[in-house]
Image 1: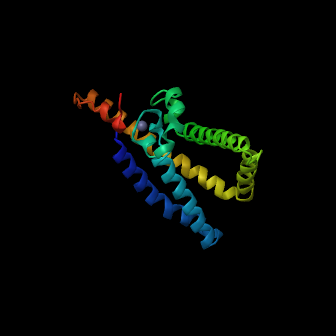
Image 2: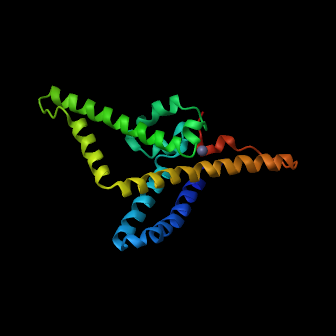
Image 3: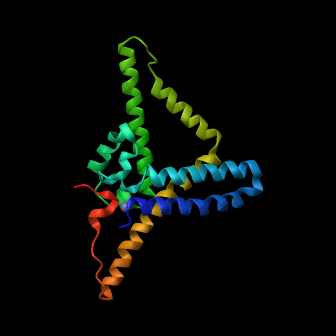
Length: 192
Ligand SMILES: [Zn+2]
């Protein structure tokens, strides 16, 4: 399995290819539109590959990147089996991580408002207001939402495809009688 560093390099390399490609595809809509669209897609691709990586399903270098918020991903890690469909599929897995992140963030906002309410600083429906604001921004920029989702999915797919290629490549080498020393324990600095 490629380690975290290799996955990062793959994420940046594919991002560097996707950004100009997106710009060229969108150029008919005007330069500003194309530049914004390419930036949104590239940003989503990088965030997805580095912070929302499929390897959040194990105790890896990825959750450390969340700093003090690493615990947000603990329940995800406990629930999702390693390298399973729910973490390492092309489309469902990244969308699930996005949905999971949204739900957890909302729970934190609800809890935060409750705490603030207890000490008399009340914004009772902050989570509803935040959600309404997010969905309003999305409704007004449907193209950008689509580009964000494409980038978010491609960032994750670059990881999953690299994992598949390495696993598949090893299988073919084994069929040809070549055994590679398994470095599974190195997979994303897995600690177990
Ligand atoms: Zn992986």
